[in-house]
Length: 257
Picture 1 (cartoon, rainbow, N blue to C red):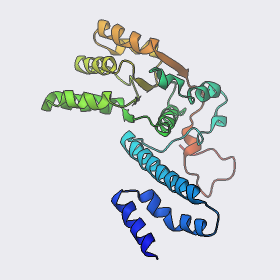
Picture 2 (picture 1 turned 180 degrees about the vertical axis):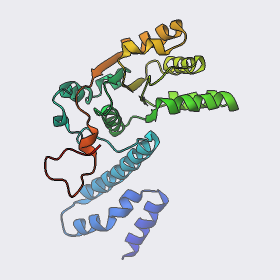
Picture 3 (picture 1 turned 90 degrees about the vertical axis):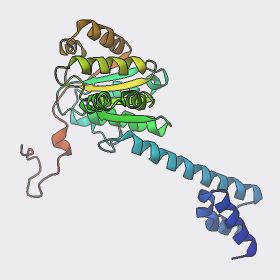
Picture 4 (picture 1 turned 45 degrees about the vertical axis):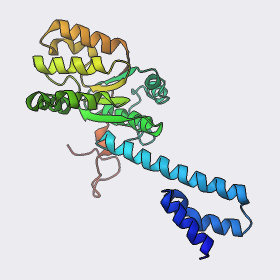
């Protein structure tokens, strides 16, 4: 290793350009072999650093999203049910709704893949540089309730307002208390102009009776539903297709329940 190479390594360390540092030997070999001119050498080193930074940022956003699984649309089996609105879901994958601050409601029976699609759309948003947070709705309500108890409610709701996309899974599972309904109202109101993805086993028209105060229900749900793309997901359960197969099962044998 030459003195010049050693000095260059130290400079890259000082500037915290570890992406360049990691590929320096390979790029020097290319340059010495005549594959790269001076400007090409500098350009590919810069691109190595950009790639490293983008990868680190992507992984950071992915951790913050707190997905249950690393679901992608590429990994979703649309052939599992011909009733699924594949064209509509693929259209949502363009994320025009996200850039417009609109929301998405995925609803249908248990097991059809709503949570997978919601997380997959969130994964696409992260790839485009958006901040995403995923959580069960019950968990969000519990967090906000805890904020009332320890006087950290303002801080907790700010953390839920901040992401470009908030995914509320299993929305409208059960009757809400007055406090929970108020918290949801504040959350949705404060996120005006920022996107939501909501998954639910109930159609949006069936959410209203779950709120103890009809006025709150009308104000919250009309605002939410009218600014959302609604996707009806129907068909057989997607979960058996994801279940590990028993090695002793014969081909075509239905999974055991």
